[in-house]
Length: 299
Image (cartoon, rainbow, N blue to C red; front, side, top):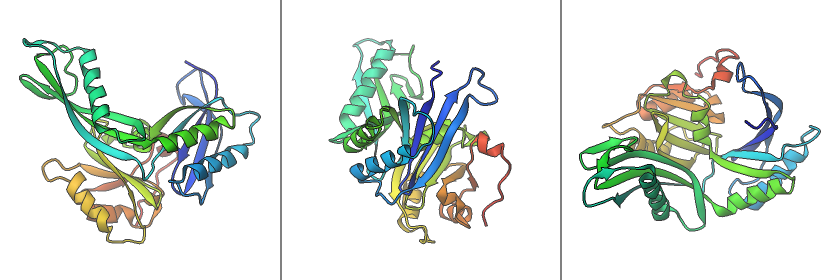
């Protein structure tokens, strides 16, 4: 395990948050020690790659630490992200043979080739299930036998222009961009769903201008979209229609909704989300935030 300090940047449409952590030898009580952190509001439109790069440079040049880490990971959401659900199939043989890892890799590669928009690159790929001769809805078909195997995937792609802008902004500071992470995936990995992480949940994450809707099942994002939303829209307008059509299906509705981000601080937002979805809603907090004490329910 690398013990060098690392930088994480969280980009939203309203600002940029950053944190520098030093991995610790013992994973508990915390796997890292925070060396510095901060949040800076920016008026730079998030969909302007050049302006975003300038904003990152301005934020990091204000860091007062002796030196910055040489690698960074960026967590982001963006209105230009593209979400796709795609099904691909691979023929294996005339007679049933054992499904191997390389067969699943072929399915993943085909799904990316089929769904990837021009001038985009892959941000996240979630396998939703596999099917073949005599089986369906299997999460891991390796070891089963079939003449063909079919896979369904949820893909999220990011514009290459944004990827390049982020890389160039960090490179100008002597930092290598190690990877991009879709913000809802980072939230799920960070434990924001809490004890209900195995339940089918609707994750709503927003900063007041852009927000993400992600349907999470068994820790996997099975459906998602990124929206622009006006916090003054008390009826939730088009967002409610999307919630009804995509995320709150009567055939398999989520057991609850979890709301995070700046939107969660708006008075009455939990109740408004409950009215829009028809399912109970809670404020999402990571285990670290929960350890700081309970927050009262927004009313």
